[in-house]
Image 1 (cartoon, helix red, strand yellow):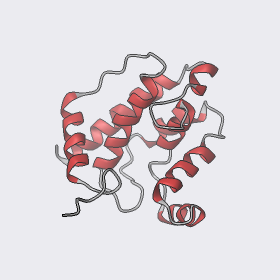
Image 2 (tube, rainbow, N blue to C red):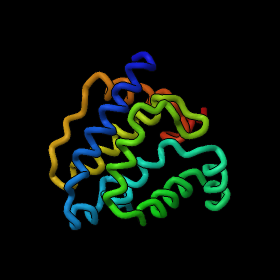
Image 3 (tube, one colour):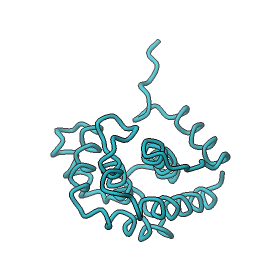
Length: 155
């Protein structure tokens, strides 16, 4: 997929997920997601952080003692303190923007939105079909990229 196509998918999926989470019940927000130890609310909060700037990311990484996964978890938990009506609004506000968090390509936000939409929809029993071609491109990227998805092979 070329970069413009990737961004169209990201925009479409952010809009579609915002529509899904617009009317979640309080119990759905509290439902454990498919992400270990995260609720639906925390996953939605995480997705609103996709455009974190370098300074904010650096401060968060320092707060997390340099641990990338801890930083991601901690920022999502802090962001989840916002009122739930903020999450769909923030996702929609990102539509059309090409800004990413530091040091990533457009493919990572596409992977994030595709995977985390399933992390939200499946546990609450909401249908949420994944577009095939973008899913294949995302899987290919994950397979080819070691960090943060899988450890490098040591021979």
